[in-house]
Length: 368
Image (cartoon, rainbow, N blue to C red; front, side):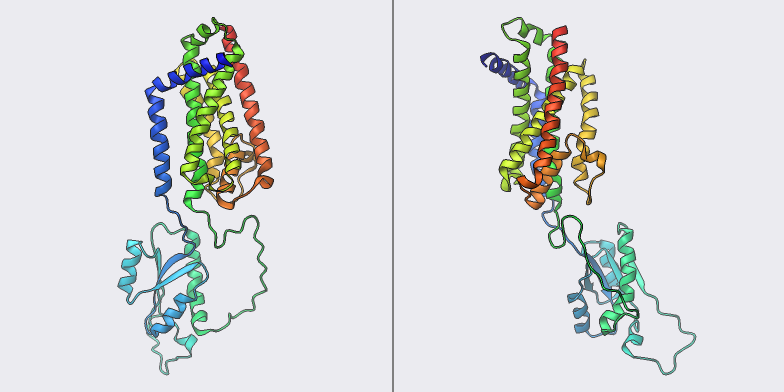
């Protein structure tokens, strides 16, 4: 143990002398924490839509805005120009319904005794911002057809079959996941993967400069070197990930479960760091291999940003268990009983990565 601690202390001094990784680590933690707290903490579940409908009493229009429960938040505007300006600015509404005067006259039973045959058919204007999704456009077209029935209290012209709602998965209605909660796993992943690159660079530089060979000329053994590298890599990755988790309030729910998941994730990236550092011949090779591992490992964290279940091949990636644990604990406060399969998967990948990385590093050290 004395030899292991001595080698670990030497590795920590080498890491502290590397200004690049020291600066990246400090600035990275500060940057991730600032980004987290600047992200919106709430989610708007309804689409803000403007409405201009002349010729109706104000209390009727207010009744429409108060009883809108189809995912739209209606705001009444006094004129067409005011509605156009609001949609163009895009701050209060993202779309607008400009209904012509007399639009609801037939529904209200108001008929013209002598209609003008040359009069143009009233046209409804649907005002849209440039970034409105196509699904919202189709829904707004349906709103135009439903408004007359809503205001007059008339039933639909057809008999609709009874509906039975069945929510598959977690029901997010009324409890949506905020952008902060979605990005938490991704921020932790960045911290862990940066430490993988740092450990890989340390191992590669020691192999190139034959520092490990000099260490082995002392009573230290190869197993002592592997133990020290594992201790340093796992410790640095875990401490930084836990610090970021505490700053982003990830430890507020299930702290024991989160800390165990972070520890297993630190073991995983340590094993990968040993592997990448053993295969890298120089700095550029180490960077290339680190990026090669970084891309697939980060996919599960990005998959958390999008609703629905990830693809099957994403769920078997080494970091899929860690991403799901962090996401479900943050969003649903899931416990040990629900997440033990993900913990077992993460532990298995961590042990496998460490065994492979340690075996390759041992072979390189023996050859040297």
